[in-house]
Image (cartoon, rainbow, N blue to C red):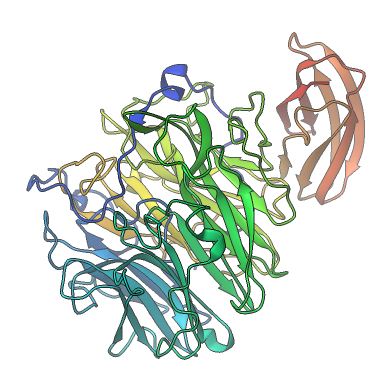
Length: 606
């Protein structure tokens, strides 16, 4: 296997954000309800077939292209023996998809199996979430939909990749037997404890909630549950009006289980238990400016977009990432801004965000509480390096930000890797711009390396790359991500209502999806804090000892500060600058070595 080293750099792309024209930042569309079933009943098929293009490593195909309404479930797992399992929502009989259910494939250490040609469940299903189970087994949970059953399918087997699946039906509480859009995680000895969250039927209130988020736990492989379909008091009516499909995620490790929830019209909240799911505490990471919103008009404000992900490090601390968008409501409906984007990062050592309308503003404007390269770690990239975000401007409709669907993994050394799907300039079909997967890493979450386009090769030149699922179990040198790709931006099932086309579930490259990304020789981070008013810090990562000179210039290029920092040792180095004597304004700091230089913008505001 090729190694993917967690420090992303050259041939990556620098961190400088391109200017986003006002016509894109202010472009709005009406928000639609999340899709429960296929709504596009057209039999039209997009003419260009995936078989006409070079392929990466592919695990399956589907014409049902809505893998999630927002955030992605766990769909891919790498086992200790380097085998892998992957699941996805499978169906090829459009437009009604009567055979929809879970497609599964297994990598035996050498090769993937054949494409799945039928679902695993005994009846129509969708939205599988996958996890290891038992000493050498696997489990997934999906929701029943449109068949004879209601509730969730739980499918498990004790030997991964072989044998029959054992099917169980898990129903919701009295008054809400249907459960939908599940998330599952396993932990404890041999992954024997099952943690499950799901929502009740949207549109059918349960205990006052339009979509109640319920929690269950089993110690015996799903035979018994305690608690079962539990509604937490801190998620009940009076605090929230309901939860939208796919706007929550769950993760477990050792004795810790945590789940995350949030959408444009709810708080971003983290719920954690450190005693195997017996007791929980809640932290509001971003407080919504309109609590208990129920359709009334609002001002325009920046918000989480509903797609997010979380991971637990080796010290038991939770790290999370979330997509950013902008929204408002009037008497006719609510709206989203398809070209507003940003990926936020937070961990339990950080302060939370306020309910200010601009708290999550990703453009560095007054009122923003995000710090670039610290808590704001992802955005649309300037691929052609002209300083402007050059896109066609007709969005594929996912009802998310232009950079979204983030995934996060933390290895045993607490080094972090984040992957997200973002609209990418210079890649389009003449009408709409394609999304690519972008990756960025950090040694500790305090600063972040270069961006890397995982789909920049010829195999993906006409691919819309979305719905990434990042393997949570990975070693120091490698990481894997599965995603969906097709030829048309947006979706056929909902959103754009494009003609149906074949969608491939695949890795970014040949060689079972592992991409080599070398360590940088010289990496300069954004100063913190920025804006600065007295002391500000610049973090620099070097691989080998290097002589560094620092200078600061104003907007007309006049040097206002210069220092010889001497020979910096390998690793992370911090340079402190006292800017208290400089007037307010915009400056640029440059760090020079014998072979290269890196410049960044710094704002001074007292």
